[in-house]
Image (cartoon, rainbow, N blue to C red; front, side, top):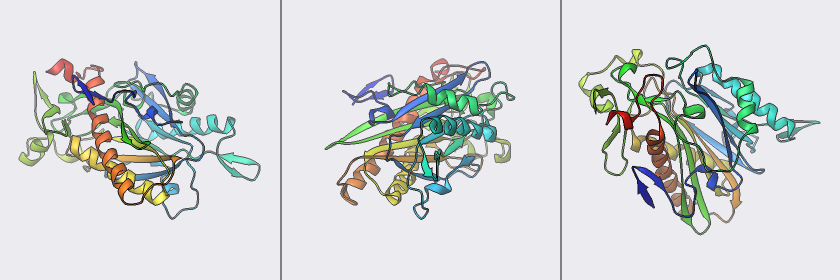
Amino acid sequence: MKIAGLIFWYENMNNSITDIPGIAVGHWTNLEAITGCTAILCPTGSLGGVSVRGASPGTRETDVLHPSNRVDEIHAIMLSGGSAFGLAAADGAMRYLEGKGIGVKVGGSVVPIVPSAILFDLGIGEGGVRPDSESGYYACEFASSDPVEQGCVGAGTGATVGKTQGPQRSVKGGLGSASIDLGEGLLVGALVVVNAIGSVHDPENGLLIAGPRDNKSMSSSINDLISGNSFKLPDINGNTTIGVVVTNAKLTKAQAARMAASSHDGLALAIRPSHLIGDGDTMFSISTGEQGGIDGYGDMNRIIAGTIKTVSLAILNAINFAETMGGVPSVKDVS
C-alpha cells in the first residue's frame, strides 16, 4: 500500500470499487444546486445485503435483501442526495436497466432490483433542486469501470461532516472509494458517501482529520457531545453516511448480510461518533459471485476484515478528495 497526503491506494489496482470485475459506477452531479446521485451497476448473477444502523434512514427496496426473502438478485444500487426526494433517482435506474432487459423475469416483463439510500443535503445549495428519475438514468448511462471519480461528485456533492457545533462550522465531506486485494483471487471494494454529524479520524492512529472548525483549527465531535459543547441533537439535521461494499467472492444472502453489517465497523473506526439519532447510516453489500469455493469461516473472516479496512480508507479518501463548496471549506482549506 502506498500513501500520499492521506490518500491511499494499492499497486496494480485503481484503488476503487471498480477493481471488482463487472462493477461500473456513474454519477450525476449538479454543482450549482450542490447535489447529485451515484449509480453502482452490478454484473449478472450478483446478490446483495444491507445493514441500516442510523436512526434517521431514507431507503428503498431494503427488505428484498433480507436473507429470508425470495429474490436473490440485485442489479444496481442508487445512492443519492436530495433527502427522501432523492429516492426518485432509483426510478431512472430501473428504467435504464429495463431498457437493457436486465431484471427479475416476471412473466413477460423484467423488474430491476435497485435498492437505494439517500442523504440530506438540502441546506448547502438549492434545496428545491433534487436528483430525480432523469438524474438516475443519466448516472447509469454514463457508468463505467474506470477509476471512480471522488470528492464532491455524485451523491457526495453536497455532503458535509463535523456538525456538532452547527452547520456553519462543518467541513466538506464527499464520496470516496478504495479496494483491497486479499490474495488468492479475493477482492473487496468500497464506495462511501460521508455526510456525518461526527468527525472523521485516521482509523490507524485516531488522529483528527475533519471536525467542527474554529478558524484554522478543528475539534472532535465526540468530545463536543460528551462535554455538552454542541447543538442539541434534535437541532443537528442533515446527515447520514451511505455506501456499498463489494466482493468478487460467491456469497450466500446471509453472508452478504454479514458483510454489510461488518462494514459499519469501518464507519465506527473512521467516523466518531457514527450511528447517531440524526444519522441514517446505511451500508449495502454486493457479491458478484466470480470467485467460488469460499470457506464460510476463514475466507469470510478475511472478507470481513478487508471490508472494515476498505470502508475506513474510502472514508478518508472522501474527505481528502473533497473541495470547498457552498461556503463550506475542505480540510485542505482549514488546516
